[in-house]
Length: 264
Image (tube, rainbow, N blue to C red; front, side, top):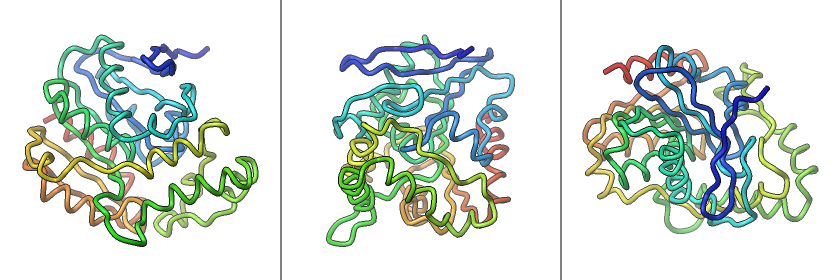
């Protein structure tokens, strides 16, 4: 039986979440196309182990996993994901500062939420922060918009077959668990990708004011989550620590690194 709880947003989305354990709160938000279940299936980052003996908040981003959403790209922008996160903290009655980890879209949501309501957070762990601050032609985030167009042209079912046949990132060539089935409703997946493709991380000047101790974790060989962005964040955020993984074994140290960081 599912242990999901749900809260309904002002625009009618139902956000599925779990709150387990007791003690000081820890939270986690996944990236676009994923879900809580999909992240656990990757066998790369174990948020349950990070939150051992703690109260753990996990959820599915709108339109992903067990959560619902609309075919409205703006709903999936980074800023909107941050609003969902802050509303979720209210719905879950978490009224003390939380240690929060987020991957990709989840990392962007955490940054926007922490800037909007710094008192709601204690420490942040930013996993594979997304490409950002691009200008001019040949932007890497154009992949999201091009993929959304492809899905609309060929249909979600055909796109999923292409996705299943695509080669993994080089860093995961020997880690078959890194392949996953996108956990987004077919009717919403192109909107979700457009929303992310139209997003950017907060302005650098604002990030320089972030007061929270922050752990930044990046992996190599991923053009949509480049090491250069993680390095730039580490330069901007005053109290930050950066780790770059060059192998799957190194990525799998992130669970313990995050747990140790959140004990600080």
